[in-house]
Length: 81
Image (cartoon, rainbow, N blue to C red; front, side):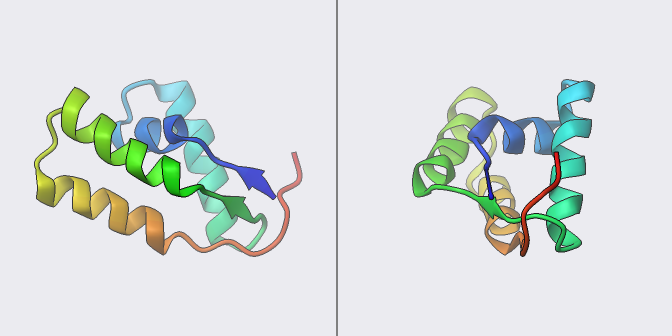
């Protein structure tokens, strides 16, 4: 199981730092394919909300869409590093 912090989600959704975006995308694709299991804390959910709304000025609808995608993320087994 891999703990995923806020930065993975922020880099994935913003795609502003390409190397970090690609790392996050690979991890999320592995999770979606059932190749790994991710752990996301409630604090990370709140922090994604705060960062997108305050630092990046996302409106409520945009933040809600991002959080909806995060909460729909499916994963099953442990990732191989």
